[in-house]
Image (cartoon, rainbow, N blue to C red):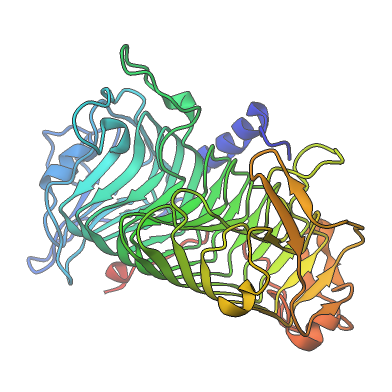
Length: 497
């Protein structure tokens, strides 16, 4: 798809998501027993002077946010809720009594934040543009589920200085900042089954005289995990965003990012980027990334280093720039203990134009940075990538792979390109790129079943199947999980207790 993903195409996609209709469910009545916490209701036809029952619901989500205490749940009935001030929960739950904000089953709840004023960037950050239409600060044990938030002039759902705030099966559409942002002082969070569309778009920018905005895109990323500890980001769809799809940045630790479907983003689909202090123990696995700029990027723009990163069993294809990119952006700090294995990296780096010159970044895997130690690249499939399968900067010393313990071994390579090295990347990288295959490699057609239809399962006779290279093991049961009924509807543990 064209990089600019024309507005008409994006609009049809957004309208399809925003108008999903549900099935009719039985009435979820308020509890009548004294020992159980009540269930409240909000409806566009309600009144905040009502008791919040099914028959007499409240009118605003903020009324629920000011009322709910540990163990309470509010069902928000279908319809559009235009807000002029951000939603700000007052209370926290407990380990055994979460507070739950949920769309009524089978109905579509839309929070329209177009009327929420976002002021100029004065004082110290975070600035108003970095806040959210649904803002949670200093709280814990809250579940947000089955809500759609659109047209925010800052972020969608934003969390700071909190723990155990979970997002299940929500949708954000048209946000100036992140669709979902979890930032400083946060730990123990799950972001599961959400859809983020058209985040970081300047379409939602509010101009302030005297404070010109210096960028063509909004701040942050589609889903932003900033300096969070112990988190899971899974089963999300992030698409048609003006910047990166999912970013773990700052000093996150002990995080898993898996089974996400990221596509048609103007920058990296998945990103790891350290700032201020050590970023460590992050695992990206079983994600699908296509039609972004770079597929997956690893960077240490600031902070002393990133450490213990595992990138495995990801399907990365048809991205305009590099499939997997190890960058030297920012201060280019140390990147150590990096494992890249069992990924399928197919047809990346061709850009948008059919020109004889390489795209500004290209290839299957590109070692642009030399500030690396203890890197393993093994059991991957690199097929039909532009210019090089695995490339490294001319700034590497002749014996650098040995002295830095960079091991490239047992990968499969396939393409029909004839290239003379080094490849000159003059547009931005200002680099000369050499190619390497490492040791114990195979050069052969991997025999995908139908790559043009994004079917990268292996034929029985595939040489990759014999070695268990790539994402899908030999004779695996086919499961195109990202293409059917995705994201899946998920149950939160607090709903099952």
